[in-house]
Length: 294
Image 1: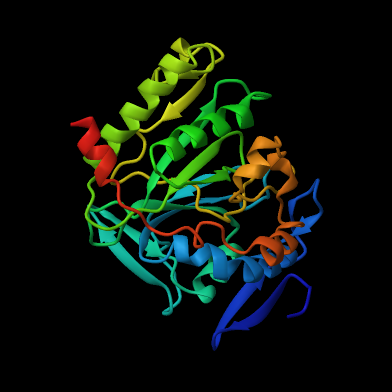
Image 2: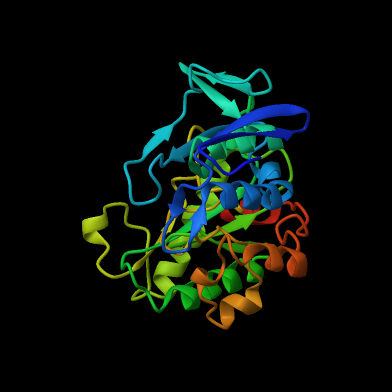
């Protein structure tokens, strides 16, 4: 592909027009659209499994991260034949199921990928997620708090994987076996959240209203629901440092790793060293904890 105002790249046998490849999308990081598309190719084997066959919401930044942005749920009126879609209610969502579709979206300056918690056509949760959201923009206690949650889950016999959101928070992913409902997972989430707020009353809250949280770290178990979405593992984020939502080891959490260390410019080495930490974690039964709650 040439680096003028427009060029064509062939992906999986599909020709995709790329406009303005030299446009800076992340100016501080020096990431142009062309470099971004190259990074998406490297991320694709890790990002696509968490977006495929789910209802996709993207956030587009046509002028780069400091320009105007908008959420896109409905597929654009003009789309290539290789793009697959799925209707849910009155929205015709994109199914991000191929590298071709990913590159096409990248050319449209879709810089973030937020898939639904459920699969297309289904009602069961694909996994269980706890969203750990600090009330402060700079929260030095974040990793300490996440470590405490991890220890609590482990004591309950629940294996989990923390991941940076790529923004300010952390999500904890629990791969689960099939057959659970969102309502069941919400009950477990409430139980875990209530326990942690009672054990660490100065650190955690499960208060929904932001104005009532003070400086506490919010354990959000309610957002995990059908029709909702969250930043995918390995999605880039439209932040100054070009951060990427990245799974962590619990040792890294206990050492207080800096989430800003995981960016589009560093993620390839990280993946070469660690692979996909979520995929390495087996799906598990939550039956014991559900029986205990009853």
